[in-house]
Image 1 (cartoon, helix red, strand yellow):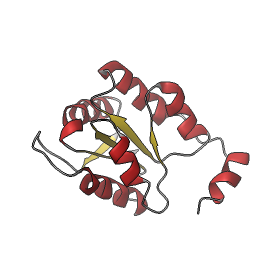
Image 2: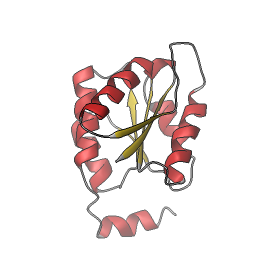
Image 3: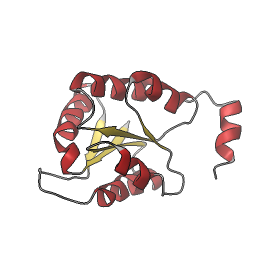
Amino acid sequence: MKIAVGSDHGGFEYKQLIIKFLQEIGQDVDDVGCYDNQSVDYPDFADKVCAKVQNGVCERGILICGTGIGMSISANRHRDIRAALCHESYTARMSREHNNANVLCLGGRVLGQEIALDVVGTWLETEFAGGRHQRRLDKLS
């Protein structure tokens, strides 16, 4: 699977950690930035990740900022993007199973590293259940 990954300065360290994890488990990563700890604007990187998912260049996206809130708000402004801010594996699983989330948002300043990687792993391995959940998603379009 090809995954677009982006962060602002608040999520930069976790972005590096997550990219390494994704590569280790055989995922194809498209790193859209940021590329250091210098202050940047999170909507710019949310736009880049969402464009890659919308255009089919990447199947899914991951966005990281300090809390994950800004990235989530920014990503969900894009048509056909279903971004989920997840803090543990249960919400990660439900975001995929029930909501078919195609963008995962994380807070680099609010999650421990092990939890963040668990959330990413769970989110990647969970499939959309379809059925009644698809009917509900259709109402969002």
